[in-house]
Amino acid sequence: MVLEILTYPNELLRQPTKPVETIDEGIEEIIENMAETMYQAPGVGLAAIQAGIDKSIIIYDPEADAVKRDYNVLLNPKIISSAGETISENEGCLSVPDIRSDVKRAETVVVEGLDRKGEPVRIDADGLLSVILQHEIDHLNGILFIDRISALKRELYKKKRKKALKRSEQ
Ligand code: NI
Image (cartoon, rainbow, N blue to C red; front, top):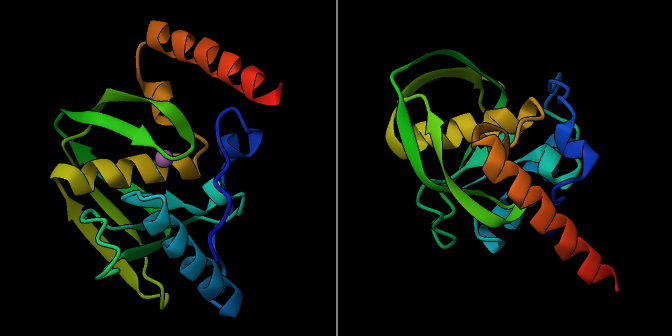
């Protein structure tokens, strides 16, 4: 099932998510639905809270290949260390429509979490994967990429978004 993606300024996107305690059929179903939603969008990553599901679950597929569907799942992921600095090119978010921006990110991150079977995993990421993981883990803490751009750019976007929402209401 394709899930509805919440968009800015929906308040749920600001809510820190709850850890997954047990992996049951409900969690499996959420993961399957998240994957369908991500590939349909299409996107390279998705956090459960973007579909209004208050759980620390992210999925990602840097290749965004809907045919292979070779995606990864991380439960309760945390960045345990980061190093360097990079600028993500043209970062965007399914929950923040009509804006893309370069964002200052760590160059490399080490992430720990659980895979979909509940086994501990540790990922040393650089390049695009590093940016995706930082972006998705931000979602679990209620942070959006527009929080990491200049205040001026962000204010302009807020105004533009308000106008667009008003127009769609009429
Ligand atoms: Ni996002």
